[in-house]
Amino acid sequence: MKENNQQATLNPDPPTRPGASALGAGGWRLAVGCFRLGRKLIWLIAVSAVTLSAAAAGVRVRDLVMVAGARDNQLVGYGLVAGLAGDGDKDQVYTEQSVANMLQRYGINIPATTISAKNVAVVMVTADIPAFLKPGARIDVTIASMGDAKSLQGGVLLQTPLLGADNKVYAVAQGPMSIGGFSAGPGGAGGATVTKNHPTTGQIVNGALVEREIPTSVVHDKTVELLLREPGFTSAALLAAAINNVFTNSAHAADSISVRVQMPEGAEASPVDFIARLENIEVVSDTPARIIINERTGTIVATARIHISSCAVAYGNITINVASTLDVSQPNPFSRTGTTVVTPSTSTEVTENKAAFIALPELPTVEKVAQALNSLGATPRDMMAIFMAMKQAGALQAELVIR
Image (cartoon, rainbow, N blue to C red; front, side):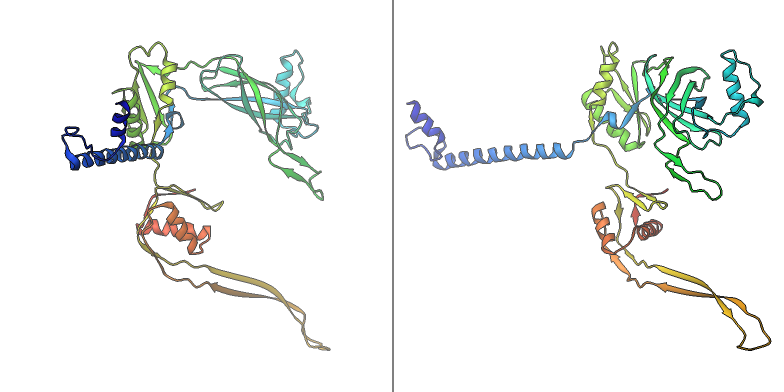
């Protein structure tokens, strides 16, 4: 009996026994068809949900924002680099005075005018100290020459206090430098010099010890404020909505750059865990339509949201060649009068390339824009001029930034 019931369940044909079904043959086929259609619809909905979730996958909150209060601070110091083998400052007054002041700390009193400091260079030391660093941690420092030192290669930075904007010492830097370049050759008149990179600036990795912790607070009145690295009202609204999906009615966008999040009950005891959960929420970010043009390097960068309306474009190059030559005018042979004269001669040639007036259709994506401009055979310089002209004509729906 169990086997017959299983066969009847799997068999799409209508039952033949009397009273086995109140639907009848037609109703049975309709029910089976609806069941199969329902299974297909469920499968399609599941596939569509997976596809939409993959397409809508965004970026983490931590990649879009910084937490207000958790910021870096700048440090700066004035120091000396020694051991430069004659490449230091050439008897600068402030270098001599700096060396004299340093020697006084060790009980050596020497007049500054008697000091020769060709192996020493006066430098400025800069560093960024992140938030929450404790005393004993190390940070990188950058050293730059202030005087006329030829190179800092092989130099050692002497102990240099690094001060904050409040004139307090927060770190101390010291150690051998790495400059990533060199300068070789005697230089001067008749001498050849080879220089790679910038030999008057250098770096010491982990070259400074933190001596004082900077007080930092990221929670105010049970509220955490998130600051967008790329401000925008749409981005702020999307960020607040994504947070509210996880922490109901906890976030609101204050303006185009900040989103304030109210901590839920019980999270005050562990703000680090709460902020970590905030940072791992995924957001579908809003990318602005923007084109960056750098004329110095010939670089063009465009985002995916740029849009170009239907327009017509013609471009062409004009080349002007100016050549200047010197001609010699001499008198006739055996002539007793006249002198040889050098006369300049200048020739100018103008070449203009022919260009067609080409109509471009509406280009809604960056791929189509790139394909259309590449089909014109335009160089990066031509593309820059075309983009600027399109912006002036109102055909380019994007922000145009020229560097």
